[in-house]
Image 1 (cartoon, helix red, strand yellow):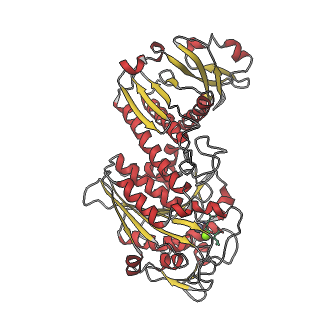
Image 2 (spheres, helix red, strand yellow; image 1 turned 90 degrees about the horizontal axis):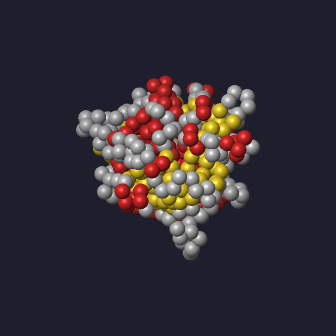
Image 3 (cartoon, rainbow, N blue to C red; image 1 turned 180 degrees about the vertical axis):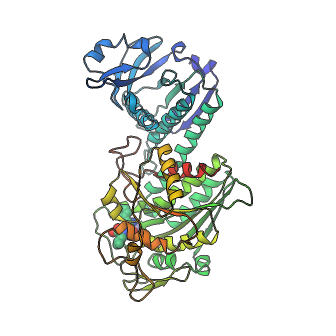
Length: 518
Ligand code: BES
Ligand code: MG
Ligand code: ZN
């Protein structure tokens, strides 16, 4: 291939896809297929415009007949078009010109990948130079596009005996082209995208693995293995150590399981020694059957994704380390199963968390808050700049916000601003949920300090958050993200996610939060 021989390329690889970045003018290249972006313009009567001006004439009839509309994620393939030195042409819709964001590119990349695979393409060129005149926007768009390519390149077929190999032997070569591809900002955008998407895909895989293959021990070992060579220090405490550390919440949940719990600690020191760290805590519940308060059978198999909070935190740490961010960050993942055996916690049992607060377990299925309690206590002891925790904590969150927004709770307005800014950068939708002292009052215990569930009815996600709040040092800014609705099966609205499967949600947003402290 001419372009490969001549142009100096940045290359990144996934299983069945290679993405190249060429410092060239796409009109001087040749290959199997080329992509032109289209947008829809006009106030009332929308019509499509192809971003490369000279191409509009060629497709004028298709535009007039509304075969090309410029709608977001529209992919129109013209085979054997023989345009310039390309045989096939894709016209890829970006939607309304005035509404163009980086998320548009993330999604359009996924739409393109799907169509390119379906039409059995092996080589696709995408030019970016006519999209925008702003370098900053271009970097953002390219970063989002590469993220979209990689995120939609993720498949979970390692447990099938064919391992996906039989179905699709060909590697799809995607060539991104920009005259300024060698500019520092674009090179860095490309590299960042690869790192962020790989970390997200790593988190997805942890969530997709079945409970028997992603036990607390395996989760800890996966974090240790993935961290090798990145500068991250990872430690996993075993049951004995967890007992010594008086983590009664984590132990109480794990006593109903034959699998040993783990308390995973990840440390990254990219900042000055004197700088306090940022702290993340993630729920690592590798399978939640509910315990004695057992869940109904329907969809119980999906409760393997109850460790997606932990997965998001592990993925975030991997990305921080690979990006070599100049900041200190720690992460804690209490990991256990919630199962039922003769030693399992019974409704009415009382356990004591690391900070000495006692709780009565009135529903053994409200277990996430119990293991997070110890994680939050431990995080508070490190006196970090903030504590952010994330968990698939409540079904109520999925009822309230569906799989559209991740709900977050915080009483700290400065942290709230940082979160909103980060989400705007990442493209992940978040929604600020209410948390007031009423919620905390609902969590008072009858026999112990606290009850693990509220009896006043409703606001189940907020009362869960209020329970967690009892384990955070009140001087430390804290936010809690409930990803119960967004950690799984978002393919219906995000085409770079699978229909059934983990999403790796919050890795991108957490990374953007951390970047604000660099
Ligand atoms: N892991 C679940 C929450 C969950 C439900 C996540 C559905 C994803 C999808 C959590 O441990 C749980 O069972 N929470 C209970 C709490 C209740 C008993 C107070 C719930 O939401 O029903
Ligand atoms: Mg539960
Ligand atoms: Zn759970």
